[in-house]
Image (cartoon, rainbow, N blue to C red; front, side):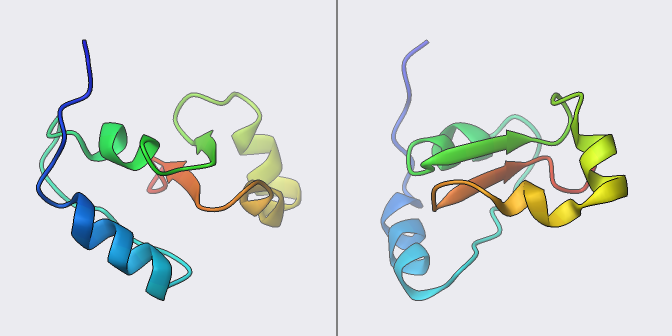
Length: 77
């Protein structure tokens, strides 16, 4: 399936240039991750990466290591 451009993208770009972090909120399956992936230069998937629990227990700052903007998907996990 190809990506469908979202209305929010211009606002997202403005916020990314003004801030160190942007939280994208919305209902399940509305395209939050797909939109964020269009602009992210690195990614950690909290719900899929099997190393995340170990990193969280030992050195959570490692999750922030990567090119920016960095997408931390499913951060609430």
